[in-house]
Amino acid sequence: MDALNHWPELCELSAVVDINEDLAKSYSEEFNVPYYTSVEESLKDRNIDAVIICLPHNLHEPISVQASNTGKHVLVEKVMATSVAEGLSMVDAAKKNNSKLMVAQSRRYFQEFHEARKYFDKIGKITNSPYNFTCYFDKNVAPP
Image 1 (tube, rainbow, N blue to C red):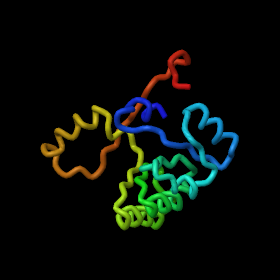
Image 2: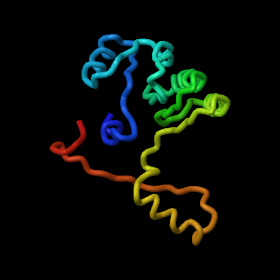
Image 3: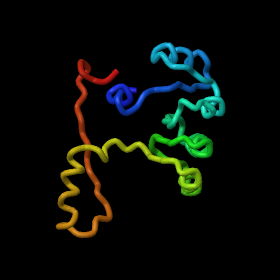
């Protein structure tokens, strides 16, 4: 939600979906958007261009495929899928429906990685890039 709110000129929240109606309604009121208790119903909403799937990993594939099949773009949290077959199913659905499919990996946008890419040609073929990401959260500044 922070990311969506950070770039209001690029994106906006159109609706929330939760099978628990109390939670759906609560989020709806908090963010002043409609809510759905069914993925299928939400995908009929023409005001929704893309979906963000933040669910248990075993639900990523079926909902991603459903969304792609209705022409919605999909951002799915990592882990993308629980098997190669599920991942390929998601990719195939996106290709077939000309929709975008992206797996959330925010660290690829960190400045440090962009800096490292400048040296790839000098290093040669890169097959693996392990890194250590460490951060300190003081109880006074930790995210809620």
